[in-house]
Image 1 (cartoon, rainbow, N blue to C red):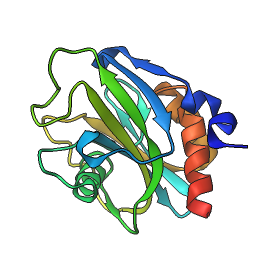
Image 2 (image 1 turned 180 degrees about the vertical axis):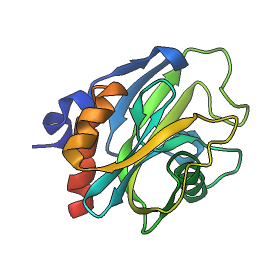
Image 3 (image 1 turned 120 degrees about the vertical axis):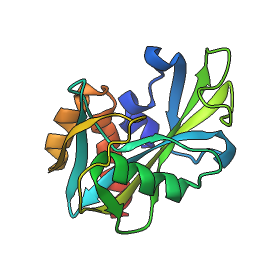
Image 4 (image 1 turned 120 degrees about the horizontal axis):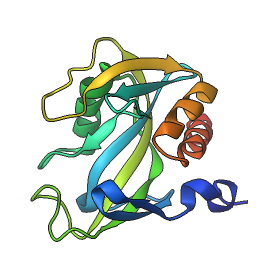
Length: 175
């Protein structure tokens, strides 16, 4: 049985109204030039790092890639900004949401448009500080390191596909 059959909610088309994006998930990689955002399932042992923002939404650390920023540098920056965490191991690929924007221009001038990708990764991390909460980013109120089951419940505040994203990350990390 393939991932699309086993994780149907994760692979279902999504509409992100706030960003005017239509997205479809695939476990394959996305071309680097399309990657506008990254998100990380951060593992501390068997537990997962989740963050809560001012909207009372729980989410996985990640965000917008800066101009000429590598994937690894973006991950390191976003982990620090949102979770007070650092990478403690290599990045593993979960997949990517391939997106099409309905906006007349890209969110940032260096981003691909209208096609772009949100990259989903997993890695071992260490939570060794407080989120830096830069002025131009989400304001994180709380960081927790929780069991996968707790993460799946909390992350439902950010979307129905997150329980399957967590299950897929755990499976890929264990192989």
